[in-house]
Image: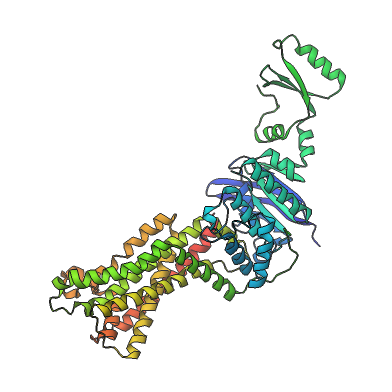
Length: 295
Length: 262
């Protein structure tokens, strides 16, 4: 039995002269949520496309569900479902027709497809709009339908490429709840995101990707502690951070730091002590900055 | 329940094709403008060529018997050209990624559009023939001639549809697909569809006599109205099969190529 749902070693991919993935190493244990965090153009979508057999790697070993994406494509396809960056739904059809179509294509009978469609429409709050053409749907409804379509039959590994990009806060949170439920049901979830909060909220482990390389991997706690311990933030009267200083968190260190600062900062400056945020992690790993200070 | 534990076997090729054909037919029926166009165009062209141009081209009043095959092909060309746009729409939309990551023969999504186009265009052919009979078309062909004529028309539609499907696969966007496809629609005018080729200047006559549409037209005309067939049927079928094979292979290879590039 294979405990790793996804295994990638030394993966490289170029588009012409442009190096998109430059030696990716990665493994995701079955039944966990992995978030790939990175800015636009970091290679997130390319990696998902390789993992889901849409494009082929130039170099390296890639296994999904224990199957090789190059030589065992059919088995990989039976292991995964992909919810791409652009809602992969048929706009001319209704939600119901979309779900039944995918059910039939997935090997369910018409009756089974119908039954599953009813379940999913209910679970994704799409019953009222079930018979309307998808063209008329809002962004959030489209995403929900898109995700529902990915779940028509059960595949152990699900890829979500920027699942909440462009959604409002309420739709985003609704989608998060669904993703958490998937994880609870034992699915392996591999998602990409530009949002730190999303990775923080959903993922067991987070990989930070930048310039075609994984620059850090770990739980959100590990990543945060890697960036440094606690920090002292100095805030001006408008609550803007004017200075961030690393600290061990001990009373001696904090009092010494503050004593040094007290004469050089404007009157009315306030102090906040906090653990590093995912923002700090992101900045630390995606820029070449050696320190997390910002003006 | 969000997830289900039911294990399933992947859909068979037959089911996959049937589902995609059903999808494309739904698309056709819901694209009201295109559907209306598919019915209106044959009617308008038939009336235009019979009552407006017909008198000038052939004053004997028999022009309707000459022009019917040409209009059938013109309409089939127009009708199948929308396949390029349909295919291109699918290829540039996220849905193709979903189909490609499912354990199915994803090229069937194109087959679906092709079959839907075939059905649409056979229907349009029926409309042309219906209107033609109303405005004085008097075919002389036997039942066998009719069956053969319809077989040739079907082969022609299939050939053109696959060609447009290939164009749709190669084109970068639906509007580009529509643009490239447009060029092909002039072919029927440069054939014996509307006027005999010996009325054309010599250089053009050479082109018109040796392009694929002319033998197809001559075959249909011969079968339906009894004009001499000569070698036309062989040329017609040969051209169609050749173009069909090229279009089919071109489609498959560009479908695969796109898969590796994106």
